[in-house]
Image (cartoon, rainbow, N blue to C red; front, side, top):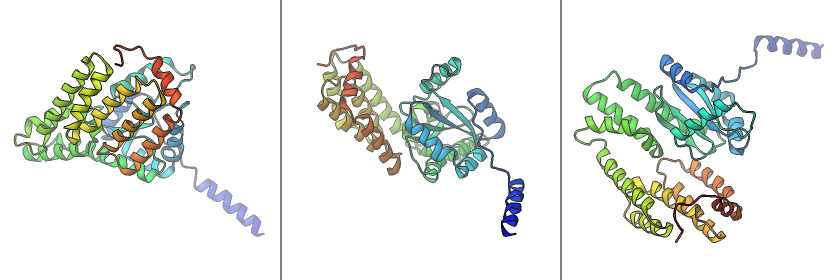
Length: 314
């Protein structure tokens, strides 16, 4: 009798409580932008390599597909998947569009999850793998808040608009500042007293651009490294990560021995540490990924040999 009662209760609950539907992800960027503008939402864009990036699939399984995270995400975002798989059967037109989006948003590592507004501005994001959905939500929430502040600023004037823009700018991760130069310029134009401190940021950007141009024009990699190292010695915190990234690119494309690879790896770790807007947890996650990349130095050496070089190493 007890067994029969349990069976009946189970059948009743199965009917009364249907399974929770999976979150709906679109692959159409323009449609996602239009829907976000119409509904007043942000866009959550998952840049992934579904058939080759182990941490991408792990993030999807352990975070993006978790019911608690999905419910929060669908409430606040239009969900967009930007997949760049290696599968030759994947839609080639979609792959080309997705590759263009990766270039547009300067995606240099996977997984990357960006918070976009309806105009396509990247205002927040997760850079690397984190397996705790609550931690991922905490990382993404500032971007969502920045979207809402910018939406609200559209109806404001004067000091109220300035303060809303400043608050939004402060929430944008430093590594996304380069993608938001128009917003920086808009804010600087109305911030006559430099309350936001963006004039100092503009000066730092000019120094960075000058150093980058000089390094690119250097006759050898060694000369380029001398230029970057001199700039690093006097760099402001705003520029340090990007200068280290520039140094890393020079080193990793010219590696010839395992010792060269290890030297490049140390710069890569320093680059992660210098990112002022990443949480300690995200930094450690990215370092673990980098250690996997450098686990076999010969792989980096082999890749370096395939690069068509524009100048000698020394």
